[in-house]
Image (cartoon, rainbow, N blue to C red; front, side):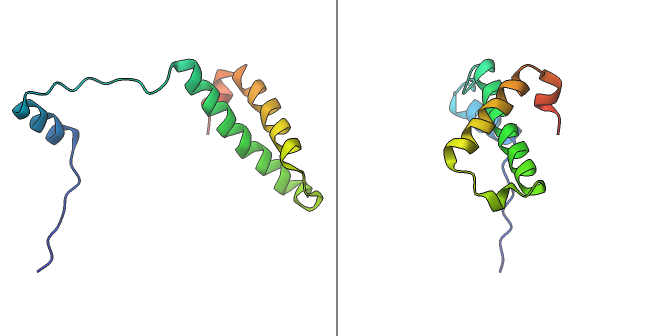
Length: 88
């Protein structure tokens, strides 16, 4: 017989915590500025890969230093524009 497993919901976790007498307190993993920097670098990597693939740069084999320079420049520009930073 196959047993189905349901994913726990936050309500279930909160109920268990309540029974155990444990308070759930959300704690941010990073400050907002750090989150913005991470998002900018992630988005910059996506953009660099897109440009690299569409312009034939993959055949030119950019070394890791050049690639990271492009990512850093793109991330800096993204950090100046909140709208572009969080857009899909």
